[in-house]
Each structure stands twice: as structure tokens, then as C-alpha cells.
Image (tube, rainbow, N blue to C red; front, top):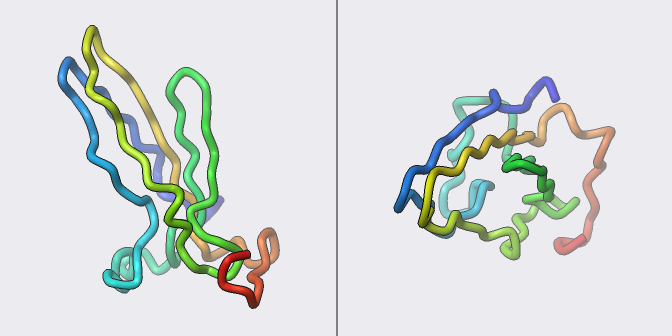
Length: 103
């Protein structure tokens, strides 16, 4: 977790939403997280009253395009969410890479 980004907290008011996106840097944006020096975002932990965790990358390091997600518009009140993005560096021995692209 030493290479994870700081916890981010967001509040969505009425009409607040987030368009469909991926949390990992794709091949067409090779420098997405270069300034951090921690590699790509290997996993996401999203809190919104409960928590959801998913891997953004296969063990090969390739992006998992089934992780595309969004935030639906708030219709009444507000919604609080927070997330933690975990990066590749520092995870080498916890989740070793595989040779097959889709493992």
C-alpha cells in the first residue's frame, strides 16, 4: 500500500455524475502515471457506504476492459464516495505477473 494514491473523497449533489471510464492507464496513454513513478493502477477500492474492490489489470499487466464504470446522476440529496487506487510498484510479490495476456 506504500505506492497507493492518497484517499480521495467526492460529494455528488443533485445531477452530479461521472462519465464511463477506466481507472487504469491504457496503451494509448503510456505516460498516464509516469510522474508518480509507481506504475499503472493495479486495483481500485471504492467506498460508498459499503466497499467494492476490483483489479484493473490482469496479472500479465494488461488492462481489464471489463472494469469500465461510471457514477449515475444523483436524483435526490447527495452521495459521498471515496476511493483508493493501488499501483503496480510494491505489489510484485503479492501479485506476481503471468505470461498469458488475459490471466
